[in-house]
Length: 620
Image 1: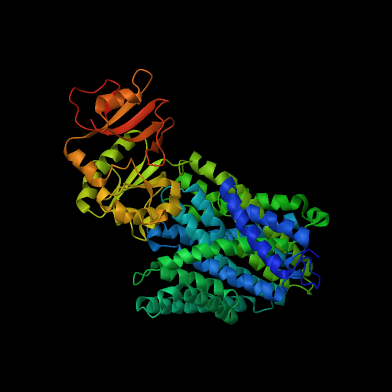
Image 2: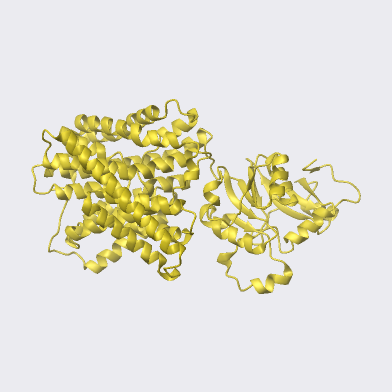
């Protein structure tokens, strides 16, 4: 039998098994970060290996306990996915998303059903069930891919919304088909299907909406202390998911997604701390779930022969034929560009929802005439998970860059503040082909930047919603250069998870406050930009005194020493312009290398005797 269930034999103690699963899961996530490989592929590989080495999880945890826990964990993951959805992201593309989760989903279901029947020899009822199951995608695979690729413009929001919204819809569809397949469909097929679908939707929306209103009310009126907010929200999510499923099968996925979506888009109370907690919890849950579920599959030579070339053809058809056709039909007549539609046609990975629901279905089909096909259903699902994650994970980035919708190692800068110096720097970088985007709460500064042809956004850089509201395509680092040191620190904390700690910088603190701030932990600050003396006030004073930005080409004839000799020690080198449109900013912990020559950008005081011919005034 392909799936193994509980046994009295234990290769190792259960506590050791659970600790091993957690350690392998976290280790796989770290290895994926180091190697830039899709984390799910490593998790599945370790899971398969663990099952072969010490046996399936059924030998340590009874499946009647394991699968409900897995189901609850999936609910928490989908709640976190709902928290990541912002309505402002889809103001221009809402109709496209609706068509993707309706027309696109139905086309995917129908075409996958046909492919499963002919390529993998499933009966029509089980092929229909597999087709419904494989319409889902989910945040566990979509969000890591988007973080890796960082597509520009609106297409990233479209991909995220489709991947998260179609999870509960696809799961509802799969549950509906399962009931009809497992219990048979009589003459009242249409009315029974309509009733199940209506009941599932109603229960999901009612419980999810009610729980969201209750949680918002409790948080808004400070009825839950800060230290209990995350545990209470987690308990409510689990409770809503379980109660909803008790009323209507798989309606819990709808409930928790609606709960997260409403809480993320209300403006009565902040849920940032809840989002951060759930993101951290999701990483651990994802790691553990994939290893446990994949270790349940005992893959041997017989199973490989059973899949054969038909299984490979099935996966290839889903990637190369079904997804492009579904996307084409769902987006025809939309205002998406050709390249955006091409990228959308090349992303539909399957994740933990498909794996968990398939495993649950197989368990419920045990000891029935459909048990053999139930086992193959799980194997086919994991084949699609591995095939799609591996294919999209390795090719989506290069394709997005080829289509002009993403950049490898983005060099653009997000500048907190739109002061005269920030505008000078942004204009100089733009002339070098390096994208810049300024964010400021001063409308006059933002207007001045826009009048100069620069990209500027009126917002608070410390707002919890600013990341969702900005087009950060091509942007790879943050320069926090506002006059407020606390705001600069908040900005670096806000963006360090997005850009990475090595890519968030802030201006140094004034000398008069450095002693007071010396006790602030480094993790609450960014890397010190330009040098110890380059405070906001010092730069502002020099700009008002006539200092200008100069681009200088260093060479064997005009070395850095000669540059300093001409402009004095006060010359402030900001960055080094490298080949291929790359830039390296000066930082206290990253001195620039001037021996190799190259171009530098520096702030220099008004010259007494003119500039060297190798220099140019960047802004004139």
